[in-house]
Length: 443
Image (cartoon, rainbow, N blue to C red):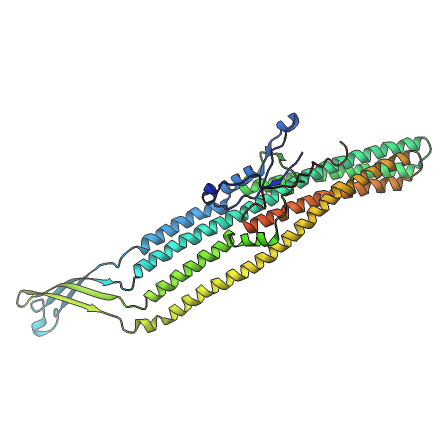
């Protein structure tokens, strides 16, 4: 039995920041395992997410970005460098200045005094860069975990489609037996036998196609943590179990905690710090120098000292301040635009999930049971000669179509639930619907 459940795997609050994910996506309920299933290599969603976060290359790049930020911090903490200057005057000229007898030799040390808190502002900019880096890493981990969840759901749905295809294959074989029996009795034409044989062959091809699709989806899931040949052949979870509804307003309140929004907040704080750094440039630094000068003619020495201050630096820096101010204000607008987009995405996922759950509930409780009874009655009536082969085939196809719709609706409900959890960065709720396991046709 396959099963996915929201909220079963929850990252402890003390570990959320270390893991880089501020929420638990869809989790799995461990179900009783038969002796046959125990021999299979199964994988849970929790394991898939852990492997992906540990091995996916898109997250490893953050290690290099962190090293780059550490280098920037070391550079920002540096004070102005000292310069050693040597100067010679009044030598290699003409007349009395020919040679070095009249030369004046000066050696000095120079640097600058940073004013206006420039060094502290530089360091703060890099520290804000670390905050943005951490928020971006959490956002990327959240997106990656959401992708793992969606691919895991695809695998669960594909497993159910294989089961459905095998059941359809079985029903087609049973129909072929029934048609041949009637044909031998002279109650059915040979054309119906041929049609039943073709239907059985097509059902067998469908089984093969669904298994190939399942194999591809297993590879697609394993590729997220770098496996080219997955070490599992079965995903473990319940496709027909959903968490309880939460009001839309409650969900939207959580959106602001999404790491993607926190990236904007961190970026806005960074731009605010860059604005302060730009303002510090409006205050001029004082360049100073001090040294000794030797007069060759008199064999005397004297101290030399000096300083210089750039003029009108505030006016010259006004353009940089305006640019930094505009860059900060842009982030605020982008954040509001992102919230509007995420609200629309949340409402779409919320409403579609409700509709998908309603579809699953109606199919399981009303439609599928009715079609199962209809197929059973039609088969019996066909064998007695009361219904035609077309009626028999139609009843079978209606049931199979309803079961496929059920699988698609359940998978859609889980995908929309995963989208909601990714947007809110939290599980939907701890409470869950307690749907009984869907068995499909009696197997």
